[in-house]
Each structure stands twice: as structure tokens, then as C-alpha cells.
Image 1 (cartoon, rainbow, N blue to C red):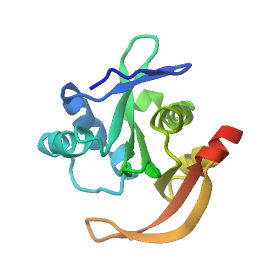
Image 2: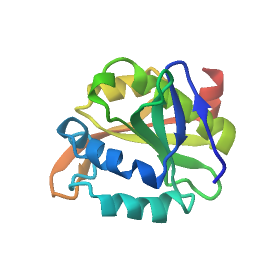
Image 3: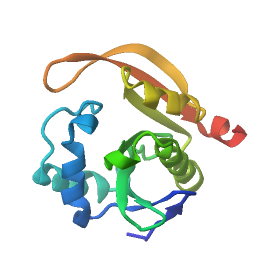
Length: 179
């Protein structure tokens, strides 16, 4: 895989590797992260390795580890998943795994860097996102980054059977370029 590095003011994005598995498992199973994910089963090493083999290595997903510019320490991850062959769209996802880095605006920077990569490097036409509606900081971040709400009251049944309200958002390349 070509070595990609997307550099921002506070963080940079680098491609995820198998060496990141332990930290991803740790982050995804932390209660503050877990409660905002639609996939609500315990996250395992085996499951993550399978994700890398079947989704990332096949190109269906582009996933990055976000690292602190000052010391290179991983603080979270971001991804574009379900990338269509025609590059019409992809779905965005993010997590700030390092608790000390939550609530400091890094989510917006990660979103901005990933949009830049998706629109400018991949040539995507649209990026979508699904956010659990109770995650107000995330919805706010998307709206202040140029996304529009496309559906606000969608009910999603997650794997444990619970129905949760989800906000659907999207941004087009045209809107991104105007911003």
C-alpha cells in the first residue's frame, strides 16, 4: 500500500496497520467510545484483523490512525467505508480513543483532513455519516463542517436489538469546494 500521510495543524493521519490492532481493540471497548457506535458487540482482536483483511486491504475501506503531530502518539482513528466503485460516495466514521484528547476540537480537524483526502485524493462525490442522535457534539461538528442533515428521526435497530435514533448527514464535493 502506498504510504499516505495527511497532515493537519495538530494531528496527522497515517494508514492503519495490523500493528494498531491492540490499541484499536482497547479504544473500541472503552465505555465512552462504545456507547456511540452502532456496532455494539465487544470488539475483539480477531474481529479487527478480519476487518483489516476483508475491508481495508480490499480497498472497500480507507482507515487512518490519527497521531499527535508533537510526539507521533496515536490518539484515534478515522475512516471512509463502503466506498463505491464509481466513487460516488463513502461513509465517514471517527473515534477519539485517547480520553485526554476528547473535547478539544480534534474531531473537527480529523473530519476536515478526511474530507480533504476523500474529495481531493479519492475524488469522491459525496461523504455521508450516521450519528447516534444523542451524540450532540458529533452532530454539531458535522454541521459546522458543512454537512447537511438528510434524515433526523431514523430509527436503527442495532445488533443487540435496541432501537436508537440516528441522524443521517452528508456533504457533497460541491459544498466542500465552496466552503
